[in-house]
Image (cartoon, rainbow, N blue to C red):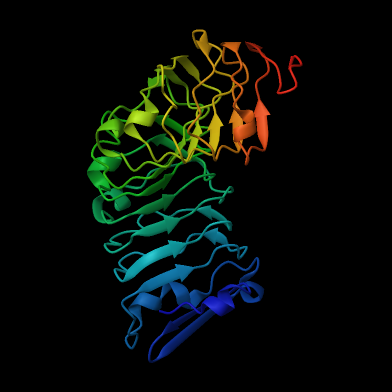
Length: 320
């Protein structure tokens, strides 16, 4: 099975099963028509020989109906079905994908509420990249560290998750992108400290609107490579001194609308020269605004309203 990247850029995914079968799935051919019948029989064809590096890209094709069974296609390593109109995931359709390392179903919004499939936890332990955001996923997150120990990028945002098991993110040494944002049905929970023991390469952290409460750890101490920190719309109660002090790659810092935070002073961002967006609205930050904004040459947006800050600009005029 081979993907013609030139064709794919024009909306055409060319799947070639050498030497006997060629299956071409194009945007024009499949738009609104479900999936070709031959796809579901691909693995059973007696004369199919498939390349070892197997990738299936069918995203943005307006495919409808149920997701076809890919069960036992053990050669598959990459499956992208995102941004289609599928309306069901049949039981067992991802069974025994033992070599799967990347799976994206994001933005399949017509799916009814569904739970994380046991098929994946039992057989797809090599997953590195998983994107199930905007899919109406509900229920509990599986224990990621147990079932997918090599996970690097995990998107589960904008769903209806209701629980995160204890130790879910323990020993994920290669994790660098975690997004659980906008799962508002989660019960109150505290920052997963198991990340501080192993996921030291973390660069993007999206936990906004997840009912996160309590104190943050010292992010600059545990995750010095952070680029994105998005924790807005939660119930955080404290931020330790120096939490953001040593983050030279930080570009996006969103803490807005954590109204239960104890009064704190403006964060030390002197090393964060690449900051682009800073949102501290309604976080009880107080005191003097430091004269550091002229050094943020890439700064695009600053939101500091509904706080108790005061300060002057470089001309000596009040900023508030």
